[in-house]
Image (cartoon, rainbow, N blue to C red; front, side, top):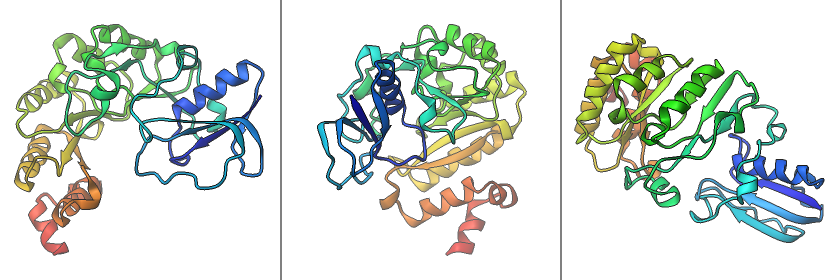
Length: 293
């Protein structure tokens, strides 16, 4: 068969389902290529992660068109034999990292996140590292809540033994830290370790971050925390978390919920925090905001 692939979001980040579909079809002897409008295909796969990404309006010449990904719906899943195949990294030669999930699901059920609805309220192991890592120097983990999985210490040891640099792209849940897993995390090679502090009502996270900083000995430039703003929080509550993270020796990174409708001051806040030269030279948001007013 002749297979066409469409990464609807663009090629700014490797599309994992597309890479797995490509690998599976190639293993069956099918011809696989990026979709071209003038060509005719037996099957064209369209994968979209973000619902705001514009769809393909060009006529697709194919006997079958299959759409998948959270940008289309939350129910679609790859067949098991496709889900557990080594991704075809040759589709994205510009990216040299390994990409994948060791776990799926999250018990938190946060209103701003689709993971619990899509993957379930329990974090479960879905793969070993060898399923998507072939020796790349960097591994980008896409897990929503690795530490909530009962097997997480075994998986952390796999990451340590890989000796690759690990990027926890979704941020670790600091509320689930304990002396054992904190020690394992501190042994993992990283450029930057990300946690998340999504709500000012969560007073466990800063407490656990303080303990982890003390245990790991890592400096601020290796310790990052995603701070969710514009979702059930005031500017004052956002600033409290940001200033507290500075005190704790962590580097905050502002994430804006529904950015297109966010107030101007929240967008200013993001510019102040996420531009690290500005963040380190201007200690108070009030001073930065005044300059932009």
